[in-house]
Structure formats: structure tokens, C-alpha cells
Length: 478
Image (cartoon, rainbow, N blue to C red; front, side, top):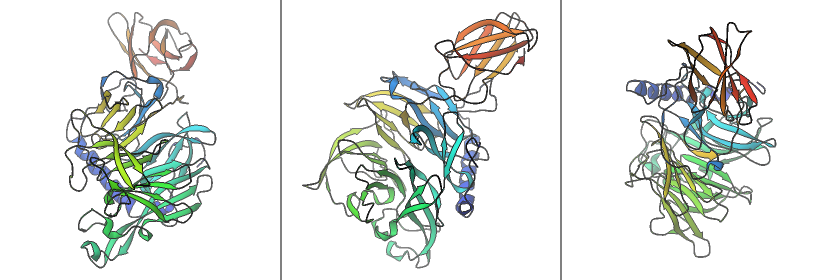
């Protein structure tokens, strides 16, 4: 499929095993969620869309830092979502057939900013969308591996770094399992986005022993001894990799594949100072000043802490010492069993997505909690980030109208359009004879308006801040 296709095409290697597992997991989550009241929005103009309700507290200190990018899981509709800096819904793509998304963010590809995420379709595929939310490309793992749901990083060279895995037979006796067990074999692949060719591959089993794990004794399911969940290409070309089940972060030489150093785990290169230890972590990143940021879950297959933290760790390579530079904790405390992310913003603030606890929090440089938004349980979001973004859908705005005793109630929305400032309401005796009857400031994802008109036909125009018409809805009957 080419640019503009609505949904990604599965790679043939993604149709096996894990696809069925993903479908079952998603189905169970949806069934569980639908059995209880869900905090979802009801929208008149798009009644088929049920995005999560967002609850926000505090004042956004830096609207220019961008919108909030996340995903909605454990709901009757799952998919990628964009919120305004204050937590107002901007875009929600309800993926069909119980699919779900992870790792929603803005990246650069072919000289432009793009929207990317992992889609569970067919077992897993990474997706690239343009500013009209049209598909530009997809990326799938090769060499018999399945595309992992944890990381999709586009490099300046136009390639993609992804995590990939497959199920293999393995001797699990070193970790208390069966001699003829099954193991989740994990790899990093660099894939040429244009051709789909795997250019480079790093196999974890060649470098990290089974006994490095904290995952416990293997059971009936394939054993996940590593659980690799973040990959970052460093300025020197090496890779920074987080492995949740070994409680460790690694720098890997891209040239040789060797592990240059290990932070955390059973064989740490660094002595780790007080309060700098982490367990079951996610989203390790090296910052411009050389510090390492990591989301310290403190919970996983079993809990090791009373609350999750977002950490900034300073490394002293000469002394081989890792010390805590700053820890960010939520008020009230949150303990997130899975997922999570941490992002240092350009103004020095820190944005944290709390994963299985669906909160998104911004902290000041000194650690003060400035802004907080969240979905209601049982929803959750794999990661949470902030990026500048603009969206201009190719579809028209949506409208619903309802007659009142002395006029007409209008509901207008435009899913994904970020530059709408006003709504211009048109009414008339027919679709070919409409005239303006009122202008209203956009107040939310769906703006509710009332006009003193009983004309039978109505429509709306979306206006930018300069008054320019961005799009016109279909005409509907009053």
C-alpha cells in the first residue's frame, strides 16, 4: 500500500502465533473494561467515537512545548490519541477489530515531522502518518521476527530501529525451568524504511545471559527473560537499550555489538548510589548533558518499591559511579506495574507518562508538580510525550443539529484539526442557499452552539485564528 492508505498491511511473518495472542489479550482487556462503567466522552457530532474523558489539574506552564501524545487502552475503543497542552482532546483514532496502539510520538522522516506509533494489526507493525493522518509508510521486522510494541525510532539516515522477537526452543534449566522450554528471543533490528530490508541485527542472547534475569521461575508460557523496552541511537552511533527484566540499561557498540557498559542489574559496571537504583524500568534515554533518564516502575512481576519514580542519573565513568541527580514522584503516589515514559522538555521541565496508571504530569526543574492530567481507570497509556504538532484532516468537519423551541442546537467537531479557532454556522432553506447566522469560539473537541434560526438546513465552517476557512461540513437537516 502507498501513501494515503487508511490502515497498514501486515507483513506475512506477522500472521503467526503472536497475532492470535495479541487478539486474545486485546479481547480480554476490552471485555473486562466494558463490564464496568467507563469514563468516556459522548459526542453528538461523532457518536461513533468514544474517546476517554480527560481530567486535568494545574496550569500548563509552557503551551509552546507542544501537545500531549498518548494512547488509550483497556476501553471499548483503543488507539492513538493527541491532547492539547491543557488536556483537551484533539485527535483520537479508534482502531477497528480490537486493535490497539503503543509508542505514539512525533518524529522526523523525509525532511518533515510525522506521527508514528506501533499498531497491533496482524501481530504488530510500525506506522508513519503525515499531518493529514494519511499513511506514508509502515515498518515490519524481518528475518522471521515479529515487530515488537516497545520502540520505533527513526534515525537521521532514514532507517528505523525497532525491537523484534520470536519464540524459540531453549534450555531453561539455568533459571529453574525445563530443559525443553520456550523462550522469547529478542533482537534489535535496523530496517530500511523505503525497502523493508533488515540492514543490521543485534541478538540479545548472544550478549546477555539468561541468568541475568529477575523474571523468576519460568512457567507454561514462553519465558521473557529480558523484556527489552527502549532503544536510543546515541550521537556516537552506539545504542542505549533498556531491559526491564534484568533491571539494567546497556550501551551497545553498533560496530561490534559488544556491551560497553551496564547500568543496574546483577553485573552493573557502575556502583549505584543511594536512591539511584531502579527496577522493572522503562524508557531509558541519554540526555544532552550525559545524564540518563529512566522511568523506574518499581513494580512488575512482583513489586519492589512502594511508588514509581522518574529518575535522572549522573554517571561518573572514571569512578564508575552512578548517582541520583533528581527523582520525580507523583502526588499522590502512584505505583505503575508496567509501561511509562520520561521526557526532558526544551525549557528544562520534565514530562512523565505513568503507564499503567494513566496519568501525565509535568514537573518544573526543581521537581515541583505543575500540571497533571489523567484518564479514568481501567484505561492506561503505554507512554506519554509532548511535541509541537499541527493537523489538517482531509475529511470535512462533523456536525449534528437538534431543533429547539426557538432555534437550533449545533454540535461541531473536526477530529485531528489543530488550528480551528472559531466555528461559523450557516443556515438556510436548502443546501444551496445557506448564509452565516452566527460565529462562535471553539471551546472543546466538540463545541456546543445555539442559533436563533429555524431554517431546515445547517452546516458549519471551521475558521482559523485569522478568519480563514479551513474546512466546511456537510449540510444536515435541523
